[in-house]
Length: 370
Image (cartoon, rainbow, N blue to C red; front, top):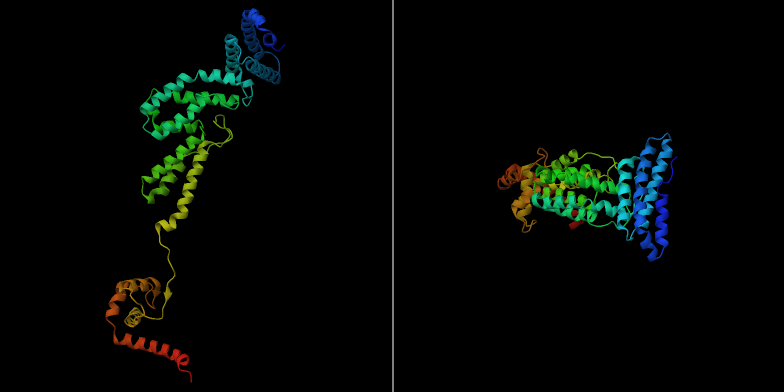
């Protein structure tokens, strides 16, 4: 029959916590023995429970109960003088999570004391990885990013309670990174970025590093290659499910999806600035009922008459070519206007004289009323 194998241990804990100093000294040796025997009994009972004829639901409740109960014992034992007893409790929790993790819901919070116990075992791997990273990695920004983000994970106890999945992620992340430290090729920036993306290290510092890396790469290539470069990065970044087994922060989307969103933002920005970056705005030209020779004759009359002021002829020809079209030529060159300007024919002079005469006839009623 499944039962609480740690009840005797809990009773001794309560007795110790409520006793006087002298009583504590008398029962302390016996207490350590009780802890050891109770933990051994629990291991044997857990092994038997897995192969029992009880339903899966009963077994799940059984292991979930022992997990919660053991978390309570570890929390209650915090600050106690019995370091041996605390170590026994943490080792028992290690055993429970190692062999029966599948029966325990991973979103449950765990005591800070146990987190400290687990992270302490990660210190050597963390220190060796960071030491090798400083030796081999030439990407100073990535080194700074990992040093700042990982130190807060492995060198400090979390200020807020974390759950089992967060603890397991911290250990899986470090195991992945530490496994690369003995190979220089695997410690390259590209290899580390690929690993951090695959294991979903969606830390805000890592995302900021990825964005900065893209900006620095864009500064090193021609503006005309921006679109192609961003498109290649987008194509190389897979779309990942936001809810997966591994995640540093379960409140954030997958780091690959956030990175891809940044790339899409760059692409949209380039599309919005492409018109002003690559081409000039084309204005509609004004059609004239004149030829190029007639237009050149009109420009000369107006220029010689002082209508243009101090504007150069070159500027006048360029402006007229850009603004006007004639009866036979949609595109006028400034050179053709210049040639016709200095070679006014008699036919052009007669044509423009009639145009000007019509203009004068229009003005007469205003200036010389009958």
